[in-house]
View (spheres, rainbow, N blue to C red):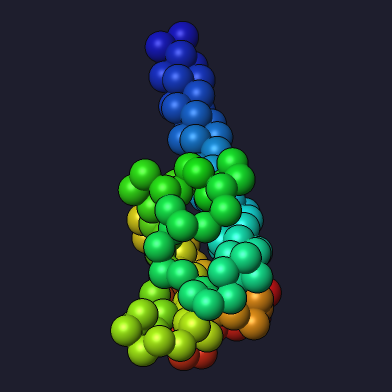
Length: 142
């Protein structure tokens, strides 16, 4: 009887481990979907910003973008659902020309997740392994 209980306990523990691993995978998939949505929201907000402020062009400051729910969540510290978001690549404002370019970045906070990036073209790209540098130089369009 003791062996049977031990076997049942071992099978139960193994099942719990498999279930938790599956849930972690689903959670990570949720992080990826969320990151893609946030990058898309930032890209859309950049297009709205440059139409509203043609003398400025694009911005590299999240808080200057038109706020919807997705942008508002990022303004505080740039982090959301396992990713940190940012905007880089704007021209200096002293140039007296509107900013004509930018790069949206989504860097994963957990290993095994892809990085995402986009620019004024609106094309979202990804890079396995979480490398922002690879995303910017050779990212795969999604």
